[in-house]
Amino acid sequence: MKRAFLGEFEEVVLLTVAILDEEAYGVTITQEIEQKTGRTVGFSTVHTTLQRLEEKGFLSSRMGGATAERGGRRKRFFTVTAAGRRALQEVKQVREELWGSLPPQTLQLMGN
Image: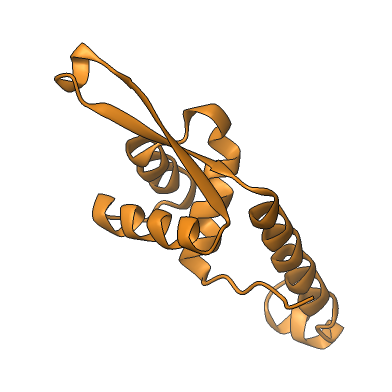
């Protein structure tokens, strides 16, 4: 099976959708990323990444109901697909293997 490749920001967005579960839509995803990572991200950047992840089959989306607080506009909620969960597991495994392969002296140089 071909390995799924995720860019660093794609991984962050996919993880955030998984964390938010039923409450994952553009605004909450953007806010959660900023809160968890301390980095400022643009809503349009998150939106573009969500579309790309959906095209890759790692996310699916559905429209929620219209709300008065949003002027009658509907929210698009995102869910991690089975392929998205597999991609996250593969990325985690690769990272753990790389970190596990670091020679001890390298970790000492890094202050650990």
